[in-house]
Length: 394
Image 1 (cartoon, rainbow, N blue to C red):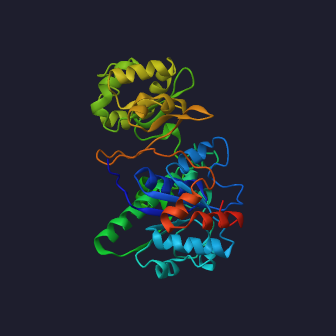
Image 2: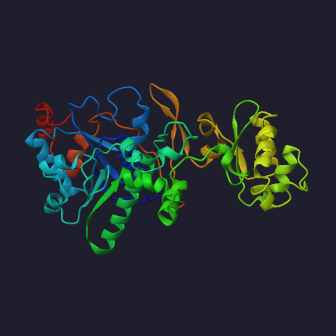
């Protein structure tokens, strides 16, 4: 079976988890991703021994080349690899990339149609272009953190923005490859944590851009919701939470009323306007008390039996053991030598003809150095041995 990104060679000079996940997505769909790391880097994200759960996701399906870029011979090898690759990806600080001669203009001198992708903190332009690529900093500037908690509580950092950005990195590279196939032209791609966090908050940011106003700048108390049946959380008897997502209350009201012990024709709540208007607080108080009477599993069974748009908020153990996640390969089970049976995140994208596949575990540092230099650059065994002896590769 062919792969979506067959014959695409990617040089990966990323160091952060999120940007490495972005290139792993390319490898999942068939790209030959060569992870470059320093032989002296004890903090390398590739495995040096044992099992690294982060590397299992961020470095899977990649080849590892341990290359000393502080040595002129190592830099020369990297330049040869650039001529042989399709995509160059890095999250290094821009000043260091330019100092080392790996900026886009310099890359084009080596391969005119190259695609250069930079995983940045705040984008390629503007006064913040050189700020550190740290998700916490980007999230802090997005506007979402202050409105996530209940009023009076500290801002909440979710960490989700970096995963949105990882997918955008893979998407930007895929679009650039498509464009090059049609035109023969390479280009520069920049994907930033700032943009990724903003798009993760699209509904709220877009609403503020359209309407402005103070109401978008402050958290909303749980019991101040305009619709008691949509986006409101109610605690169950055992302290877990039930989430209702029923904006069209006329559609869902008979089923919900039935499981909480209300007559659907109760004159206080027999219309959407009453439920969300004059009797809104009364309905919230009733639902609050009703859901406290039974544990979460009771409510989960009742909600599912009536196919209501609601669910119990789960913890990580739920997706880890959910047959739906397993069936769709969102969670994979694997045997790892020396470790045993493990679970790891699978593939978030389904493609019927060219599916993602796990063909390689996360590599040990420098595991494929000799293979890459021989097969991609044609180096002899003697030359490879000399480079290893001199500490240029490992």
